[in-house]
Image (cartoon, rainbow, N blue to C red; front, side):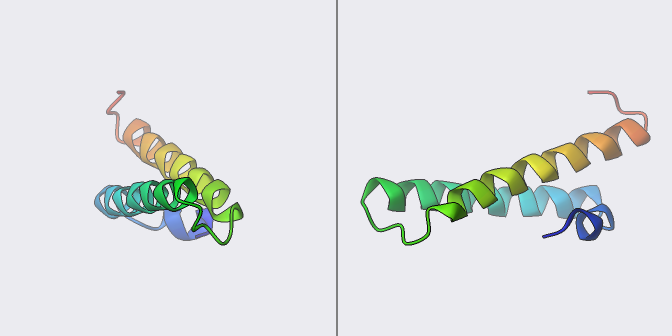
Length: 68
């Protein structure tokens, strides 16, 4: 998902997306461990999506004045 699309989402929607990406990352790690992973590049994409979502969550918290 592109950053511009993610910026339009609310913090609650971003949290939901983050949980989905974390589940996906876990599943990919398990498939990699058992040798069933067809596209190793998916691990990298998922890791970057998680970082992108975390960054946007922090930006929104800072914008609202909730310094974490």
